[in-house]
Amino acid sequence: MNQYYFQCDIFIDDVNYLLIYPMEKKEIIADWLDAWNCHDIDRIMAHYAEEIEFTAQTVVARWGKADGKLVGKIELRKHFAKGLELAPEIHFEMDQILWSPNGYAVLYHRENNNQVLDAVELNAEGLAVKVTAYYLKVQA
Image (cartoon, rainbow, N blue to C red):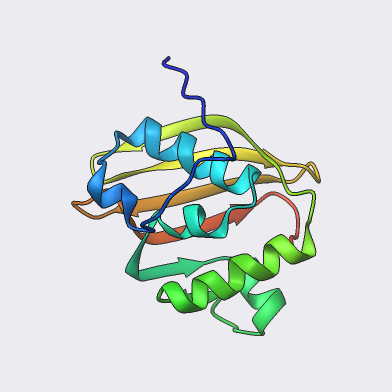
């Protein structure tokens, strides 16, 4: 398997850099993990399409939305910013990647020992349009 290394001090002057520099799925996942580990909200959000649909138990816990769903980058950015605030030591380590023709599922574990599976559907530009996050343990 190819290894991809990124650094937290990457300067991105365009949050849509993924459209300018298309990535293969493995590179997308590696950059997404690195963006989270660097706590770089702009790089994190660059992985999502404007029309993103995101579903997770954290949405229920943080925002009281019974269906656990957020729609659009504005809502998702607010959600992720809250997550970074609640977990200042947040760190993800990838365990496994499962592939589909139009996306992937990434299994990873967090700094709090919770295991997470994100099922991700990508658009033609390689941006996430639908994500469902599954957690082993309850996550706030």
